[in-house]
Image (cartoon, rainbow, N blue to C red; front, side, top):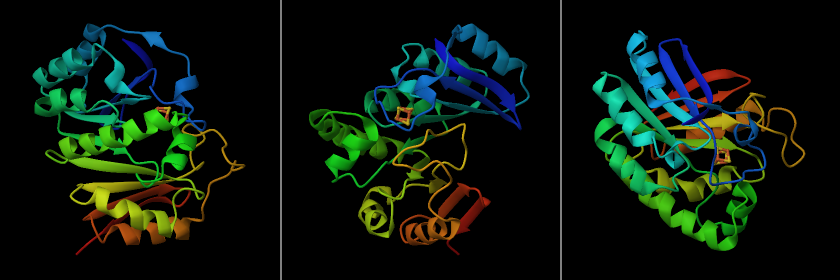
Length: 232
Ligand code: SF4
């Protein structure tokens, strides 16, 4: 399998896969160098590690043919697995369901805004439309276990108006994470003229408070650090 990262820090083994079926213009990860590993390399590392949690992310893990055997190997080793996805491969999420603790799935904009999705993903109009139905299927599968919806707050696409339109799709998610765009240079390339963290921290917080209407927990990550908003 091709990886862009393999690390074991702070109680979590992180396996970052190379390659994605989207071409998001702000994505660092699809432009990083990759290295080949075997399933055995990763499972052996997991067995030696004291970390109980394994995060499978990257770019897009669900494209790797070795993903399911790897998940089964990690599960057999007693690890608790979180699988990240852009939601384009619900068939893979369904197969992973019995072996994982939960999922992290990104929503990039309201799902009825095909022009925004095209701009944010680099997909054609036809593929963007198909993506929306696959993403909805993926969200429904993930909600059977534990789901964190991940939203990258790029101000032209995510604001109080668009968050209101996203609310129905996040209902029944376990939590939402809002990430302030450009707040971690390892995650983003400049886009739409933004080369510094944006929008303001208070604005991201306001969006988080709106999301509490539909979910129990909202995590905010950005230059202000990490903030957990929770319903009582
Ligand atoms: S941002 Fe996510 S979905 Fe977009 S290209 Fe990168 S890994 Fe793929």
